[in-house]
Length: 201
Ligand SMILES: C[S@@+](CC[C@H](N)C(=O)[O-])C[C@H]1O[C@@H](n2cnc3c(N)ncnc32)[C@H](O)[C@@H]1O
Image (cartoon, rainbow, N blue to C red):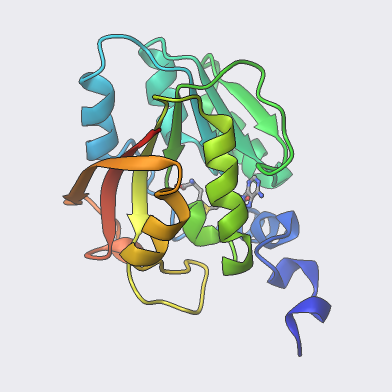
């Protein structure tokens, strides 16, 4: 069977793929908490950054940011993921949006895009578009910070990216400021994810 004729729930570029998994409660990527390196990054910033979380899933991080008064948009194209995020967020002051990352219009200029388990959820044919889109969404000096699944894992999701491939996607428009091991990974990512911060040129 070719990719083109697979049903939508077997194609990760389609919301039905993710709706099925959220609907069945099969979400092995879900950390269920604010990860440590991102918590440290946020704590180190005295001034809140206007933040986008693309492919937010349950949106645990959005809740943490909102508690600290950061303006945050959590975006996902799966209505079932958005329903899950709404439960996790309760009354938190988060702009929760059901839309496609490649098509939506931000409601305000962004200063930070947070990455976790989003790039590795996208089929590789969308990666060049992802690199261009994060560059288009951020002004010069804006930050892309988060967790990258750095490994050779052709079958996914999660799809592994090699560091030179990630560099090729981002270096035309970004400079990498930070690249660190991750100590609190959940099993699917353990030993294979890195915390990185990139600044828009
Ligand atoms: C592996 S999950 C990660 C969820 C969350 N970031 C986390 O760390 O738990 C990938 C998420 O990206 C969403 N997604 C995939 N492609 C998308 C797109 N083009 N626009 C918006 N969301 C998308 C899926 O619906 C899914 O919730």
